[in-house]
Image (cartoon, rainbow, N blue to C red; front, side, top):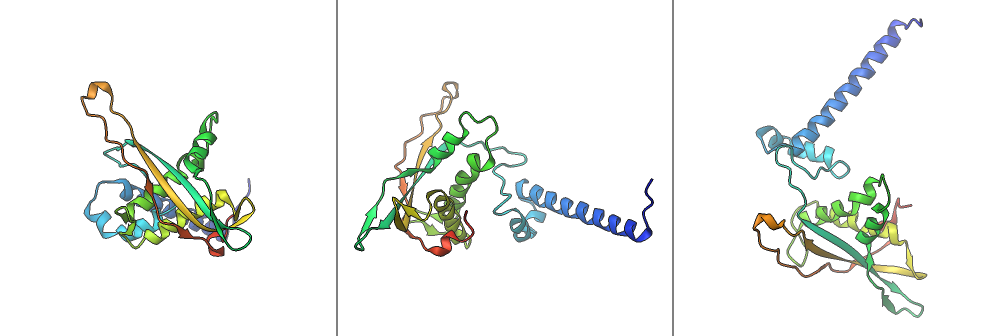
Length: 209
């Protein structure tokens, strides 16, 4: 058997302790995020959010699961510049429809196919209020950039060979009908929600494949 020197054992022990401690802190942050509000989670809310958002956001609660009760379809369209300097508005692109197409027939769809766009829209919706999309939290700008970059990564820098100047999003909400035995009334249909046009520049493509 290999004999480890004392310095090597010390390094291995410290590394193991560091990994175990980091894992415990991460799992503790996730637990506080999904647990009901308490004095500990309120005191360390900023630190917990820094660990969880945006990569590890959870859409469930520890003691009160809240399944989705509506389907949201997100579309996008772009405005480009044509030869001569005029602009052209293109047709809507079904981003959610693309995700659904990638899931169907796939026995093991990726997380991005299932939740990336939906969570990005939830992030935006939770940081903006009213039909005009007014910012409600300081993280609202981050939500806008996140949603925009997801769409631009799929669309690219051009549409029909024309440079993209602006992008617009539309969300259509369809409520999930309650089961017949529940006695609940059918949900009222809502009109699609269109966001304002957002400018697109080279910075929006930074780091995208």
